[in-house]
Image 1 (spheres, rainbow, N blue to C red):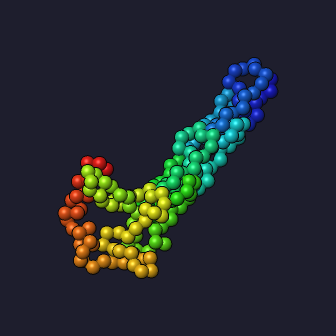
Image 2: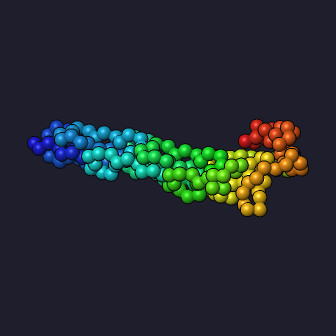
Length: 181
């Protein structure tokens, strides 16, 4: 009998053929009776002797993955060998799958946020949101307005800014989110 080589195994004594490790598994030893599963954050093809680390922007959530999946829009994997994608934080977005970094609204300048519209029983409110999927979600944060040069600048305490910053408006938004968030 010949021993099975790396990347293969044979669980039954006396057999003449070795089986290849399936995708998501590996075997480095000769004469193995089973293959090992690749840990989360890694993957392998058939007949592997080692697992490969997922690249930035891609993840393998479970042990035994045969490939790494691209992060969906709004989410990123900013390092190697990750098992989960992270949502872009408020004020950032990811507009394509498989990205390793979020894009900052307004080039990272202050007073920018990401938001979505929430409408309940005819009442419309804008609420901050993470995992934004495009620059269309970017806007000026509460207490700021878009200036002539495209920058977010502080508002005065008059008019709309005062309404948005008011306690009544905050109570309305919190109530809507509790019911429908």
